[in-house]
Image 1 (tube, one colour):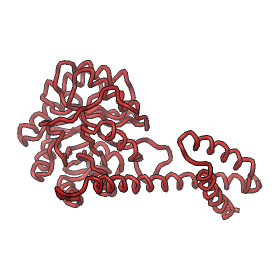
Image 2 (cartoon, rainbow, N blue to C red):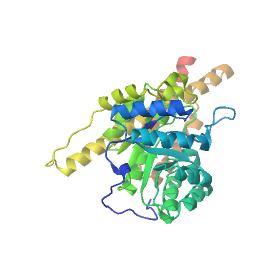
Image 3 (cartoon, one colour):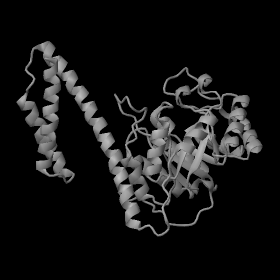
Image 4 (tube, rainbow, N blue to C red):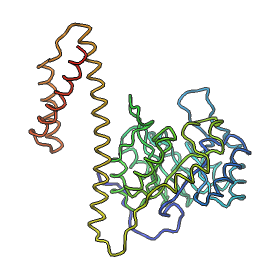
Amino acid sequence: MKPLIETTKQVHHNLIYKKGLVLAGPCSAESEEQLLRTAIELSHTKKVDILRAGIWKPRTNPGSFEGNGTKALPWLLKAKKITGLQTAVEVATAKHVEDALSFEVDVLWIGARTTVNPFSVQQIADALKGTNQTVLIKNPVNPDIKLWIGAIERLQKSGITDIGLIHRGFTSYGNTEYRNVPMWQIPIEMKRLFPDMPLICDPSHICGNRTGLLSVSQKSVDLDYDGLMIESHYDPDVALTDMQQQLTPEDLKQLLEAIIRKNSSSNEAAFVKQLDNLREQINHLDEELISLISNRMNVAKQIGEIKKNSQVTVLQSSRYNEVLERSIKKGEQVGLSNEFIKNYLEAIHIESIRIQNSLV
């Protein structure tokens, strides 16, 4: 897919173009004391470039803490003056943009729930006309690359040039390993389409927990992402939102120090580096495929339970033929051979029968 407005390679001085950029801070700005203490501890790590904080919090369910709103912006400005860190907040409306800019916020980001709505993105783009504001765009909650590209194009048409992308994963029903499934192939495609745009990984929202943060962060570095956005709170166990995925500033420092970054010599052949990157992509895609196949087998197990309770035979040839025919047509559309599809489905079918037979 070709973007409407193409980027050109140029030299940037904006901080978001720094390789190894780190944005960190609390999920929510809960109080002035909480925000200042967290910001100061983060600045002491010497690892953080930009202080992020949730001011307006669009929660999935009503009744939970939805942020302090505009009254928290002076706290953020105070933290900026004390620590020297640039600041970043999420905006979802034109009024959010106006208020954030009035308190000298350096970076705005558009959240995943907003990216899916072209009307909201357009309102934000209109509010930014005539400014040189830096804006980061999170991927939409659903895996729709056109919506992500559309958000970029709307900002570009409003004259915004310093734009970055944030990969925070995608909603997937029934997924257990991640809060939001990475689907690495989508941000990788965005990087191909917009090679001059910084690509930042948000492992906090991909994982939804602390235990997976290092693994996902390492994967993003292996795939040549440009930076990380990680939530940090001076005491995560008392956080009002997403306590399970936030790190203390000291734990964040240890995580960042644990990441292994490959050093490439100046005379390293370009094709070797490209090959390494592509192999990393295959590794991560293979992991996602295995996870998807596991989910498929779980559904097959549920079908087996129903067959068992209804005293229906495990093998249903007509159903298999229907799946095979549909899959062959789909495979032809995407350039896969009939032989490959048949072999793949046969292996899947055999494993499904094995699982269902084990129930009977």
